[in-house]
Amino acid sequence: MKSLFRLFRYAKAYRFYFVIAILCVIIESAFELIIPMIMANIIDVGLVNKDIEYILYQGILMGILAIISLIFGLLYAKFNAKAANGFGTELRKAEFEKIQEYSFINIDHFDTSSLITRLTSDVTVIQNAISGGLRPITRGPVMLILGLLFSFMINGELVLVFLIATPILAFILFLIVTKVAPKYAILQKAVDKLNIVVEEDLNAIRVVKAFVREDYESLKFDKVNSGLKETTKNTFSKAMLNMPSFQLVMYTTIVFILFFGANLIYVGKMQVGELTGFMSYVLQIMNSLMMISNVFLMMTRSLASAKRINEVFDEKLDLTGGSLNEMPKSGKIDFDHVYFKYASDAREYVLSDIDLHIKAGETIGIIGGTGSAKSSLVQLIPRLYDVSEGKVLIDDVDVKDYDLTKLRDAVSIVLQKNVLFSGTIKENLLWGNKDASDEEIAWAIKASAADEFVYDLKDGLDTYIEEGGTNVSGGQKQRLCIARSLLKRPKIIIFDDSTSAVDTATDSKIQDGLRSIKDMTKIIIAQRINSVMNADRIIILDDGKVAAFDTHEKLLKENEIYKDLYESQMKGGENNG
Image (cartoon, rainbow, N blue to C red; front, top):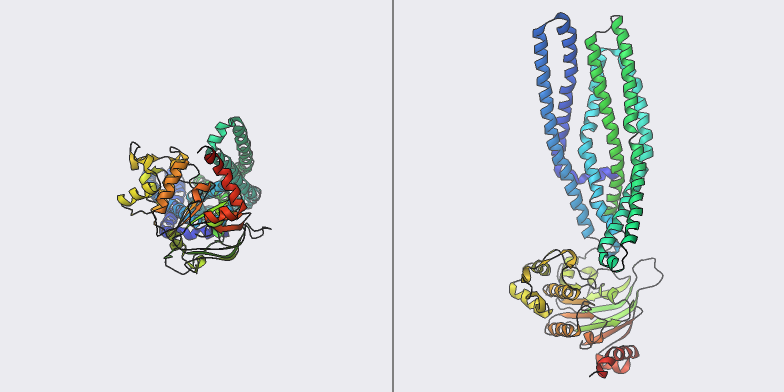
């Protein structure tokens, strides 16, 4: 229960609604409990004495109490809905904001589909437990205490029958809850597995169709879907035992009460109206207890969901910002004997003894084979990951000392995997600078060579981009992402193989556009020599180490790796003029 109570701090703004809803239930239940007493009086006094006036008076009183009870019931529904929905909203918001603070390493600890489930399904489970459980969990004790009190006032002997049944009901509930509780955690994991398959299939739908693997994917989905079905069936088949078990005990109790009650009437110790009223109280109490048992089952499931949500909140942030609340001013970068590995317990470093010094405003090329850790190197600059040993400095200040927002405002990175969001081209570009003018947007579009296609589109900048940018080509997507990064006017801009999908001529235009920007340190990762050969200096990475760092001309003369790479890429061009 502790994990569930921890989440209620997000209901702080809605405590008033919760309190009012609980009060409404108490008042509703109290008025409802008076009705059986009036009904008993109608039978034992009105009918026995054939007093029509008394019967009408008591009947009108019953009607008024029923209407009052109904009004408070409706008020409860209103305030409970506000409280439960507000709580769910705040919980999702807090969870999403926590995820936004995660570093890449934190995110790597969870499957994407699992985070989605924790944000949606798990929150909904808790929200439903509250909206569906607040009334019975409040009404049950009120009905039990007042119902027993009124029942005892009618006949103390019959109450003993009911008191014998209560521990039996509690024992049944205990057995069911202990059996079902572990299964709810398994059920939510089964939902995670289903979401993984769905997400993977939708993201890779083009690959699936290209390789004609629809049948394979369908079989894979059927497998996890069947697993979810069996887990659900196994879980709820035990949970459903709650209702028939309670009904068996309840109706058995009623039979015994009727039997003993009839005997008491026969010997003159009880009247018919009293037995009728007593039975009404018993039914109300038993129904309330049955509802409470259902709430316990809902709470059991919500505990599993609460634990999963708390895991998101308890994830220790791998990166925290420093206290320096100002942006770098020049863009000078120093790697001071940097070592890096993704996991602290990994045997080998991804980057080893990186000692580089980049001047402000320089254009730096980075080249190397697949797996040489080019992307890993540049991701240390905006602190997408932190160094394991050594330091990364910007303007002679350790990047760990900068406020993260200020640091990342000063460093723009066009990642290897380009992402556009659903919305217009202009809306996507304004991610770089929400206050950018039309002139600035036009400049960024031209510098990224995106003007070749943007203005030819029917709606121009107002062209709608589908989710994931599926209605533009890979090269167009890359150029829009470059334009978006340029709009930030950062001190440092990093291109992580972000022109791989454009042709050589377009790549050359982009490089010309970048060269015209003088007050920005530019780092270009590329597979093609011609993308970096005009850079001021070029870094050659080999197996996570700096093999060389010099100008194109010197590397071509002195470095065998660069020379072989140059000759293999440029040979065809030389042979064909």
